[in-house]
Amino acid sequence: MKHPNILAGLPGGEPMEFGRKDGGSEPDVKQLSRELKEATDKVKEFAEDAKGRLEKGEQLTEAAKTSADEALVKFNELSAQMTEIEQKLAGGLGDGGREGRKSLGQRVVDSDDVKSFMDRVPSKGSVQMDVKAITSVTTDTDGAAGDLIVPDRQDGIVAPPERRMTVRDLITPGRTSSNAIQFVQETGFTNNAAPQAEGQMKAESTMKFDQKTLPVATIAHWVQASKQILADAPMLASYIDGRLRYGLAYAEELQLLKGDGTGDNLLGIIPQAVAYDGGGLAAGSMIDQLRYAMLQAVLAEYPATGHVLNPIDWARIETAKDDHGRYIVGDPQDGTTPKLWRLPVVETPAMTVDKFLTGAFKLGAQVFDREDANVEISTEDRDNFVKNMVTIRGEERLGLALYRPECFIYGDFGNVA
Image 1 (cartoon, rainbow, N blue to C red):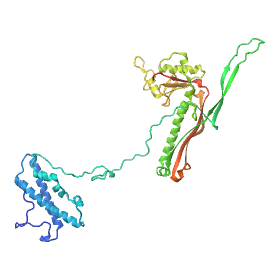
Image 2 (cartoon, rainbow, N blue to C red; image 1 turned 90 degrees about the vertical axis):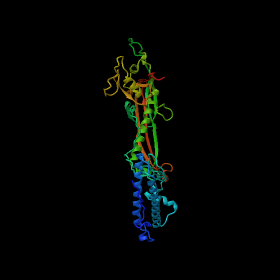
Image 3 (cartoon, rainbow, N blue to C red; image 1 turned 120 degrees about the vertical axis):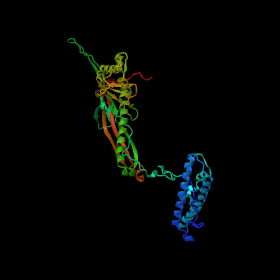
Image 4 (cartoon, one colour; image 1 turned 30 degrees about the horizontal axis):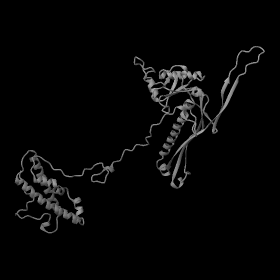
């Protein structure tokens, strides 16, 4: 393919000065732009032809290379004239601003990779040039468009999982208007009732009573928030309210089960329960032990009304199989309330793994509410007023009475060393 000199002069053989009106001194920008476009098209045409030849394994002729070199030299002159005109129209730029004002054609011509490509004749090849791609990055770089992306914001707050509270529902409810629970408990009875002979002194029986006084405990916690955030995000107030109430219920369940009675703690059920002895029978499987714990409660004259287990231990029991691979406790497809030996089974992580509590919950214990769980807000706390902060407090007061500790049986399955 012939590559004519794309920058040849006008008829008559005399070269003309590009971009000048009638050869005058004033630049014709439109004419220069047209000539620059024609020159760019010719350079592209030559580059595409050269690339095709190289991919086919053909060699470029020296004449073609010479013609290309001349075209690039003249093209550089056109580009320089255009750049000079643009700078004059813009009021002039320093050297530091020239790179940013180069046209695409000028950037192609000035590229070292293009110049290197034109100087060699490889068997196959291509030219790469640095063109900034538009991407989703948000840094202060060329092509950064990440700030245009708007996230799909979902409403509300994703809260962590909450424990299902169960222990309170097992115990008889009650209310009090005092700061302590007091009751009289019979702690001894000598029964001497027996047949008596006529005219003889009758047998005397004896009784002993003790007064029990149990404190009403206060369970509370608080958080701080600014007035601005509560006003600007109204849903946050109800969210905080719910989380504070959940925190009270969580602490309450642990107190009802395990409170040790020291300091401001309640005296819970487990510290007062009697130890499991199986009613004098030898320990068997987990299922057997729970049945013997029921027996022990019956012997104390308080028939058990339920079992409290850790979910891990209840899973062990439900998946126990006989020698033929059949489940011992119910059918896996049965969705009824968990029961064992006719009594409901209550699962709660508040119970320690490998431990169990069996007892007459309704008859043996009662919870007394002095102040129901509530949430209050106030600015009158330290320097809240001058800082525009508010204090949000959750609080409740309650007491626990265990009338007959012997009707609660606390034991160890023996699965954990």
